[in-house]
Image 1: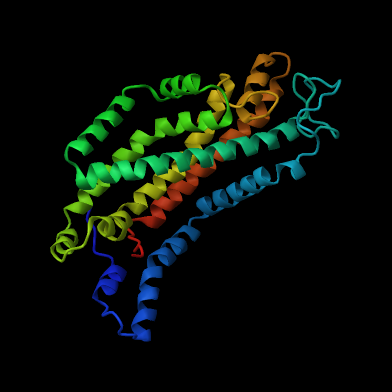
Image 2: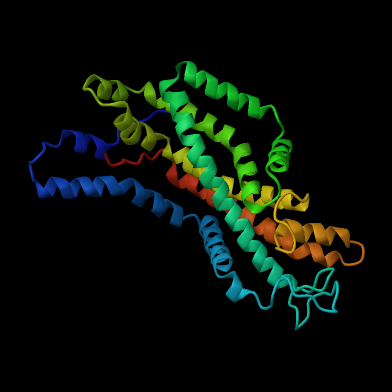
Length: 313
């Protein structure tokens, strides 16, 4: 994969301080915004990705405004147990008479919260580790990659369960456990992209004129690894939603009486012979949300292509 020196960066480096040429400054702004505009235009032409994005926006809004959206209290019980959809309960009731729709809405908040926490935690840890291992290398980079290789030796679910068991049950602990599973792959991706970028001619040229390491990473290296990293993070959202449901299903995630899609699946599984409908709403919710994140990730991959994004100094 080849990388070209971003035009906006060249223009910024060659501008003479104090020149005050408004035309050149306006042209620089246009060149800096062009990659984002091209990416947005290509993404808008991808109909499945746009539909998936709209669906995810709706899901996030439901999660944010869950207390106002849910028709009943998700923890209140009734004498109607394991019933199907009705006028009073649009998605039926669970094994203790709680409204399934209200619990599904509350579970949406838990799933979205975990997804965002996992991506934030993994990004904050993986970006500096990947850049150090890829751009600087040396003994420190070797130690980092050996640690990542050690984490890779564990199956993902086993590692997540082990971390969750050590930290204890809970939404935050589940997020940390899932993020630890995701970090090694992201570090490898960032390292591989950084290794390729540091060998490019424009990096050597920047070093020759005395560009410092921090400015080099922020302005030249990071913009060139942004595209694959954005796609990987988009896919990580779907992975986090599914992983949280798995941990909650096994009792290491969200704890009752708080609802999550995983705990709803676990409750429905216990009564699957008497009320098979109970696993349908949370199962479909997981299916559609994970599929939507994957479609958005595919759309971003096609839209970003080989774009490079100039970063400010």
